Length: 190
View 1 (tube, helix red, strand yellow):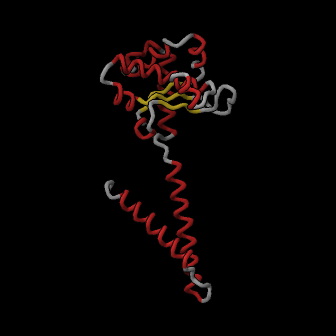
View 2: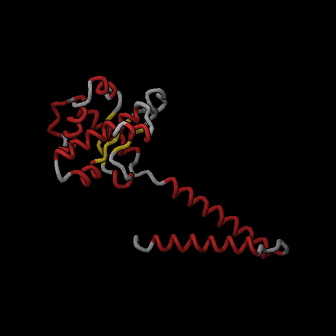
C-alpha cells in the first residue's frame, strides 16, 4: 500500500489541477440546479485539496507530547541521580560525556534546559533539534533533543566519530538556545 500512495497522491493532484483548469477555461453557468451543484462541488473540492496541501506542508508530529514528556522525565532523573547511570544506555553516556566536555558556563545553561535522547531523527531528517524560545525570549520551555537513530546510522561505524558528532550536534542545538539562527550556527562551524 505504501508504494502506491505516491502514485494515488499524484493522480489526485493531477485530476484536481485538470478539473480546475477546465472550470476556469469553460466555467459552468449558474442557470439551473446543475450549474449550482457543479460550483458547490468545485468549492468543496478546492477547500479539501487546500486543507490537504496545508497539512502536507506542515508535516506531522513524529513524537507525541506524552512520549516526549516521558523521555524528558527519564533524562532529568538520570541527571539528578548519577548513581543510576547503570540504567543509561551507551548512547546516553556519550551524551553525558558531551555535556561534561562543554565549558562550565554552557553546562550551567543546561541546568535549566533538558537534553533528551529520542529515536525520531529519521522522520525529522535531523541529528538534533532545539525546542523553545531562546535566552532572550523565555516564552517556551527549553529542550534539546538528540536523535540517536540518525546519529548512530550515519556515524555509528566508529565510536570516536560518533562521540565527536554527538558533541557537535549538542553544541549546534545549544547555539540555537543562545539565539543563533541556522545560518549563524553554521557560520560557527557547527
